[in-house]
Length: 258
Image (cartoon, rainbow, N blue to C red; front, side, top):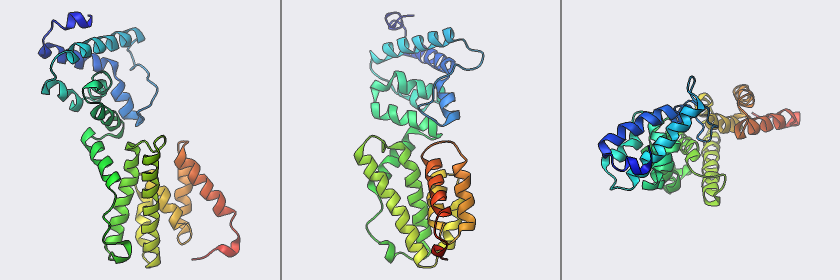
């Protein structure tokens, strides 16, 4: 059907049709499984490209009809639908309703969280840590918690455009510097052992940056971590781990210190 034909259909009837065709398109499930919002699309198994083309066309036509009328809460609920396919389709075809929400929804599908989580993390990252207490003023017990907090913000930088936007790049660099500062303060106080559990983090970036700090006092733990990261998927983390290992192996033996 065309947008004109759909314009004669009630919103109550259009919504389940949008859900049907969004699921047939299936893009959200693929992105959720790959964790990559820029993943190249491949039709779901058993679905022809012609059927996908029709599903996309129907989603576009329904979306045009919905956008031409007052936006109801039922339409907005598509952005929080239980199906990742529907959430992704809403972000793609109904993004004009709220571009910020649409972008956050796309990122949330790939990250396995909600758009509210994405928006909240962006705000948390850009706000940064409190100015007091300083790291030097913090207790031995508080420093590992701060390291955890900074690590979470570093991982959350996937939700800002630090590759293309200088302001976001500066923000991420600031988080990286803060992570190093916390680690160095812990090491200075003889708390390096409290960093070791972070080598088992589920997040590659936290494992990477912790291993870089631990190389000089716990190489028996840091080197295997870097080797595993180097053997992982190609990208920034893999390359950084490989470079760190090359420098470590090429270091003068006299430079070995506990």
